[in-house]
Length: 395
Image 1 (cartoon, rainbow, N blue to C red):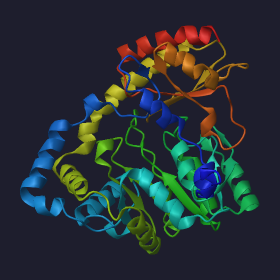
Image 2 (tube, helix red, strand yellow):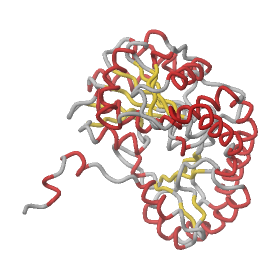
Image 3 (spheres, rainbow, N blue to C red):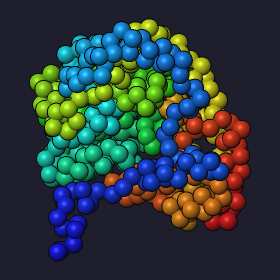
């Protein structure tokens, strides 16, 4: 028989594994201090509140919760998602929402619905690896958009759209993964102007915006009513409530959501009924914003510890982003360094980070690396960075 790989879907064989997921398996070693995965802090989960919601649902609607349900999502959860999206500054009805098993499934469903092999998708460079996987599995051709300290450069986006005629533009404007960069309001307006004038889809990923450490709330680009027929906004409860709950949603044009629903039927039938009903009950019974206040305060403390520590241990000439929210700090080492070559030296020293090169679709910078700061207390972060210091010093 020919090589087994020759009998597989050609895009499955060409899309690489996520370096984050590969390192995630190693992170279960209790002796390692991991700065690799974007995991919310388990000790800050509202276990008591979720237990009450699980108990309530099982006692009052147990048979329904354990049964098959709608592909589009349970009415209570669609309404809750619409309300949360409206509160984010994007007026939304339940009919404009389709519930997903986390926003990652939303990315997969959008790629299946919108992208044909060879279609161009414009992305930030660097960008979220698992989004690149989702679009890559459909045969998308990626083209980078120039970015700076304010995210996507509007003039570069306009030029790229005119040059490449993309099927879609994918971006994370708020606390971007992997860089932590946030796009200012003026630039969001400029990008809305550009998308409104062009024939392309906007896929706006927004998993982190509620993890802000200042009083400033950035409104999604999708809030512009001119984009209602071409914008998809992805959100999730994974970062603010629980990633194990697996509840997210797509906000988009109703006629396209109908087609996405067909893709979801073929892919997974539905999102967990139990999880949806529990999440909807929790959101109705609790003030999530008030619950998040101490979480945000603690995450800000952890971010500050990471920034202070990195300034002490990274080689002279290194650069850091200083995120105002989210989970990640992005670093660039001086000329001559290769972060990928240092990963396993770091593991031998008892800690982990993610090298930056896999996040790029073009011209990867080998000097870059990503640190997640939310999973560890400041004390643990201090110890982990102390272990890293000789790794950078000896490189």
